[in-house]
Image (cartoon, rainbow, N blue to C red; front, side, top):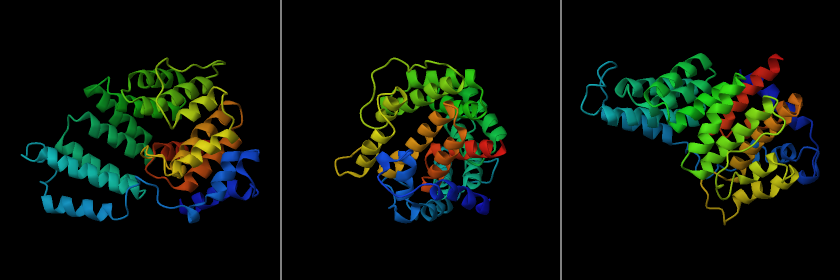
Length: 305
């Protein structure tokens, strides 16, 4: 796996020359090349390297009961939270199988918790266990059918599996129902792209008041109101002192932009360009963003083709 990724991630970087990103035929690829992993600082809001050890220590100190006994214990909710915390730390290190194992323990403590099941589905998705992810998210939705986060995960699965009607329905619901207008924008992006990938000539967004700041430039790009080169400015603004929006550093914005713009290329009939964008995204190593797992899933599909 490591050798396969190393070969893959070298592909777009070798194909791009140095220069001004905005004037490049593929501006985001040029920007990603210039901001290679060796030059990037740890993004603000990223899980720290010491969090895994701290989470392991807190769980050990709590002395959780054996599997099968947690749900009936007095501290079931506390133990579940500690397992979930450890799972998040493992995910931040790229250990998605390990994260899923911890979330199964959390589920043992709280078997009717739809959020834990959705977290488990996300971890299994990132571990590329799509069958397991589908089972977990179906169980989450059986408990809370209208839970926005669970519908988002189900929509991601539908999108990767190219079940366009289901993906459109899921993301339309997410885009219209998410109380947070900023996070609702990501549902809007996926709703738009699901329509484009399904062959809809004139996709639409759900009508609602847009959020402020990032990722609004990506929605404007989809509508043709921004060029790819013009995205460079709001992406680089992520590292400005005036940016107080969490999880939107330049590296994090670039990670997201590479995914959504790459999908737009694919929708326009250029899957080989999309592959370069997804590989550049993975090279940035923002492991804790869902776009990282989505990109890996699409890379696997494109390489098979």
